Image 1: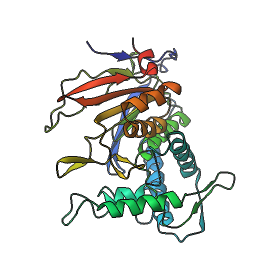
Image 2: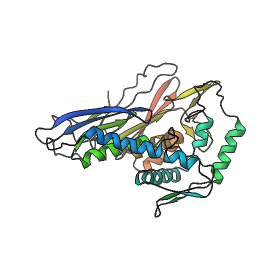
Image 3: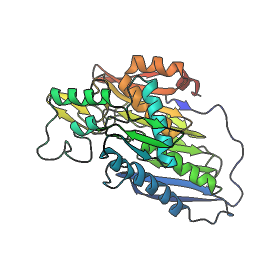
Image 4: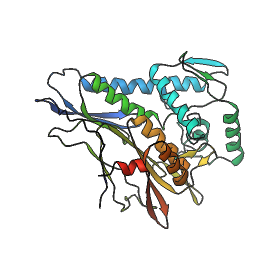
Length: 339
């Protein structure tokens, strides 16, 4: 039997008569993006161009792949330098540091050096010739540097301190934020009914033409040693004023001897997660929150993660590897959405 999740509050206002379903899609941040928009006849703006501008601005600011991005400049800046933050980066950084503090470091936007060491950065990647997993001494050195140097955020002054050697990596929050920006862009142009997505992270509002909600199936987890999705029944979520994001150990990984080296790193230990969490899905009001929290909860593990989420009313679903299969665990807020 399939679980179905529906928000407790439904906006009853349908699309205006004569609205047309339009689509847009493309590439950004090394992945795909898409939008389905129920556009009223009165809206004449070039929505696809407006959406692309939103995405391009985030890349210019926060990409760790672009050598001239503001983030890349920050990462290479001298110790003691302050960096003015545009509104988008300020919003992301403030939220990222808050999640870092709330989770005791299970989520860390300044774990970029660890990301590079384990081969998941923009250079020296695990799938390139000559790569080797880092030695314990290198991991220990990166942890020591991170412990001694913290990027100080001056919210009033809209600036960020580079204490020296800090490497930011916002890849576990920027996609979710980009989804929110796409939704906000459409709303500013008078589009209230839409489904937007970047790299599998989604946000929906309103309904489809005809009144059906934007039904989204929770991302499946491949079985161990196979590209096929396991036979667990994926829940359906009505993305009506909600966003969804999934993190896990199966997206980007390589075998480091007998173990799986996942791109989801535990910033506290400096190593890839080894807690048997195959995936963690979070449903929230913003995709930025869902993106960051799904990563943090994956790192925390199922027991600590559910305890943390239940105290904060976070809707989350874990799939944990046990005995060659997958065991589902959910939070109270997730179960509260079940219909």
